[in-house]
Structure formats: structure tokens, C-alpha cells
Amino acid sequence: MESTPALKDILLERIWKAGRLTFADFMAACLYEPGLGYYTSPGRKVGAEGDFYTSMNVHLMFGRLIAREISRMWEILGSPESFTIAEAGAGGGQLARDILDTIAETNRSFYDVLTYRLIEKEPTLKEAQQEKLTRHLARLSWSAPEDLAAGRLHFSGCVLSNELIDAMPVHLVEMTPAGLMEVYVTAIDGEFGEMLDEPSTPALADYLKENGVTLLAGQRGEINLAATGWLRSVADTLEKGFVLTIDYGYEADELYAPMRKNGTLLCYYQHTTCEDPYTRVGAQDITSHVNFTALIREGVKCGLHRAWFGEQYRFLLGAGLMEEMLALEKSGATETELLKTRLALKKLMLPDGGMGDTFRVLIQAKEVEDPRLLCMRDWGKF
Image 1 (cartoon, rainbow, N blue to C red):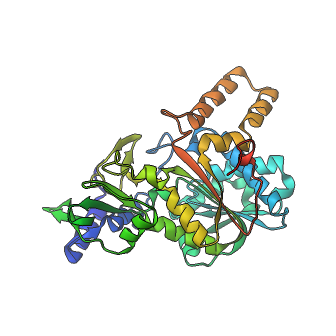
Image 2 (image 1 turned 60 degrees about the horizontal axis):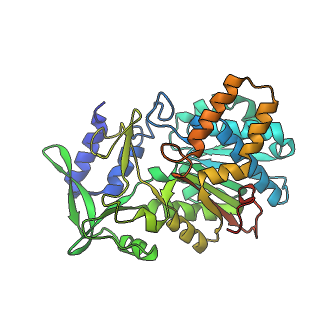
Image 3 (image 1 turned 135 degrees about the horizontal axis):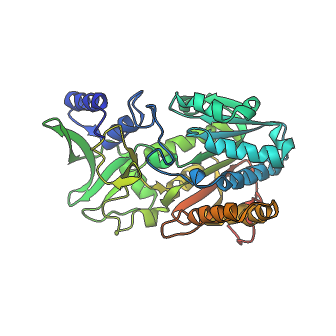
């Protein structure tokens, strides 16, 4: 599939009028232009019929274990009579269903007092979410991302995101002999190109300095100012509770290591990857790895302290993976069902082709002292 013609024309016209676009503005349009962007146009993005898998598509056990941890968060807050799970980037509602099914089954007292708020930019997904979550409609609420950004939401509970931040628009920078330069998107003969020039904002150099990053000459990197802005909005929204972020990425020293000379920008289309964001405009996903150091540092500034951070496999083990497997074996599941589950969990847990150490989990807490989360079990001090 080629670029979405209408979106390509819009972007070329914007470049013609402005002379150039920051890569962040280009990426934002490719992914989120109303009705035309990758995430704001109809069509399945995730799963076998889409362009990529996420952990929730591998097996419902992923959602069950998140549900166990969120139930623990409710208990840590004193089992209040009002608790909101706000899932940012809720997609088609699969993760929401797995979490709500589990809580309804295992912790009815919690289920009866919770609100599950789905926050999704693509408006046509609400119908799919309602259909998938029919048995939980009494527990559901909906909001737009703009409601979160504008500070119109306030609640206690847990803000959850799974592979959201990696798809936020990023600035591209490159270190040159003349100093730090920004990559801008230009157009030549109706096709997209690049140019280097002075950074569009001092915030880019400040970001690298605050995160202790020094790029080598010729090295590129992504700077996700949108992620730290999003986290500030979350901190303003959350009165008390937790922020649970699951995504692929690294801490700053590893993310910007010299071996990543070209950064981490990657595109997904029909379960294949490429490094060219200027092809299939509007028809392919564009992502970059998350800088967890920046999220942790920004969180401290706005009242979110790090409660736990580690690889996905450690989170899943601590949250109760072995207990879930034992319960499944005692349930009378067939050997075929058990084998299928084990193979799925292998993908969720193992490195080298799996998701176990590529994905990280960050839990931040607000107005909660020394939380005893399930994922902390038997892992020493954090």
C-alpha cells in the first residue's frame, strides 16, 4: 500500500507554506491527522489482521496479571469506594476486557466500585469497545485524550498505558561538528526529504543535558517532548494512586548508546519493519523506543515517585504468573490448551525474539508511601 494521497498532499502543502516541518509535526500528522492518520482512520492496527502485535494480543494472561496488580493497588489505597482505571490508548478494548473479566471473577468487591475509563483518539473504536465490553457496560466511561491534556479529569486510581508512548511524535536530532542540529522534513519534486538546521526549541538541548546524554558526531537520536508533557497531564489528573506504563525502551544511557548511531525510529506495516518514515504516509505505524529515565525524572518533578521499574518478565512473575499457571492446570484444561498457553507465555517472558526484556514496566505512585506491590515480591529493594 502506498501513502494516503490526501494526507500526503496536506503535508506537502504545509511544507510549501512553512518551508519545512519538524519531524515531530510530520510524525504527528502521519499518525494522528483527523480521519487520515494511521491511528485516527478506520481499520484494524493490532493483531493478525493488523500491522503488529502487542503483549495483550499474545495471551489473555497478560491482562489477568495486570488485573491482579491493579487489584493490589486498590487494596494499598485502603479499598476505597471509588477507584478509576484509566487506560490511555485503549484501542479496541481487548486489554480492558481481560482486566475487567479477571476483576469480576476474582475480586467482586473491587469490581463493584471501579470505573474503567477508556481514552482513545480514534473515535470509531468506541463502537468496537462497547461491543467487546458488553457485559461490563455499567462500569465503563469514555474520554478523549484532549480531556486528559486539558486537565478536565480528576480521580484516584490507576492510569494505565500499554505501548502508547512509543507512538508519540518525536523530534529527531543529529550531532554535527557545528553542534546539535535538528532534522526537518522538506519536499523536493513532490517527495519528502530531510535537512539539518538549528533546533526548533532550546528544550531539545535541555532534554539531552537533563538526561545526561552526549551524542557522538554523526549520531542521531529521538527526543520525545510529548511523553513528558503527557506525564505532567497525568500527574495533574491523578489525585492519588498509580501510573502503570508498559512499553519497549531503555534508560537514557542505553537508549542513546553509541551503538545506536541512527536512533531507534522504526515503522511497522503488515508485520514487517522498515526504517523509512517517508513511505506509506498514513498507512504505516511509526515508533521510537521510550526513554524511561526521562519519565522517571519528570515524574519526580510532578509528584510521581518511582515505585518499581524493571523488565516485563520480572513484572509478570511478581504479579503472579506461576499462581495463574497452577490455577489453570487445576482447572481441568486440556494438554493442548496448556501447551498453547505455555508457548504464548514464552513469547511474553523470554528475550531473543520474545518480549520479556525488550519491554519495560514502570510504576509511579502519587500520595502513596512505600507501596507493597505484587511485582516487588522476592526481588529485594527497589
